[in-house]
Structure formats: C-alpha cells, structure tokens
Amino acid sequence: MSDNCLFCKIVNREVPSEFLYEDETYVVFRDINPHAPVHLLLVPKKCIRSINDLKDDDHKIVSGLFMLAKEMAKQEGVNNSGYKLLFNVEKGGGQEIFHLHLHLFGGWKR
Ligand code: 5GP
Image (tube, rainbow, N blue to C red; front, side, top):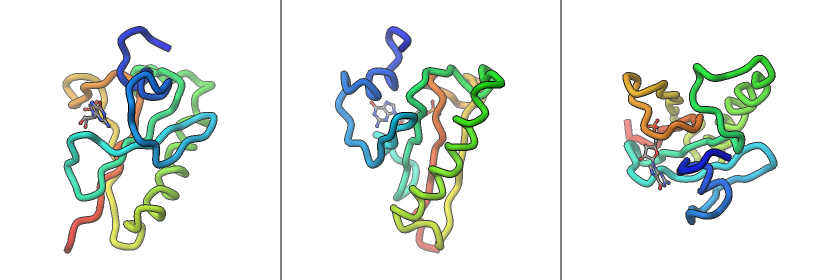
C-alpha cells in the first residue's frame, strides 16, 4: 500500500465505498463523478501507478481486468447494448488517481 493513495484506502476500507465486486485481486465500485449512466472503476488491489509501471509479472493482473470488465458489463446489463473501456495514463492522459484502474462506461440510450 502507498501512503496517501485514495484507491489503496478504498481497497483497505479506510475510505468507504460500496463494492460491486471483490476478490483477492480486484475491487469494483462506481465512480463518484460518473461520465455515463454506468461508470465503474475496476481496481487491482496491488498499487501500480499506471500502465507505464507494469512489470512482466503483472500481465495476469491486466488480462484479468479485461475478463472482469466482461463480467461486470454483464452484471450491469450493458454487455449487449455496449460499453467503453479506458485507462488514463499519467497527467497528460487524464489520470488523476495514480493507482491503476480501468474505467467501464455504458448504459446510454442509443
Ligand atoms: P482517472 O482520472 O485517474 O483515470 O480516474 C479517477 C476516477 O476516480 C475519476 O473518474 C474520479 O471521478 C474517481 N474518483 C475520485 N475520487 C473518488 C472517490 O472517492 N470515490 C469514487 N468512487 N471515485 C472517485
């Protein structure tokens, strides 16, 4: 755990957040400032700063995030209507919380 990392605090339940999913590797919760009717954050418990900081050993964490996204889209009922997945990387890429997370956006009426 990194000091002053908000998502570490959420993972460790020091900051309250309702988890839609949790296992030994990940938690999933809703974004506090949603940019879509469904906006989830899929967060590995391991504190990795960004995609730039992935080590070879982390490949399972990343592939697992996509498998989890597929399941969460189904759970939220947006798998058939469609959704977007996004990693922001570093400040220029719009990243504000420096603990790896995958955004899942969906639920628009189209
Ligand atoms: P980033 O810009 O780093 O890719 O995304 C960080 C996301 O975390 C933002 O969309 C922001 O709204 C969300 N966020 C920031 N603080 C909190 C919080 O305390 N709780 C939740 N659920 N989401 C947060």
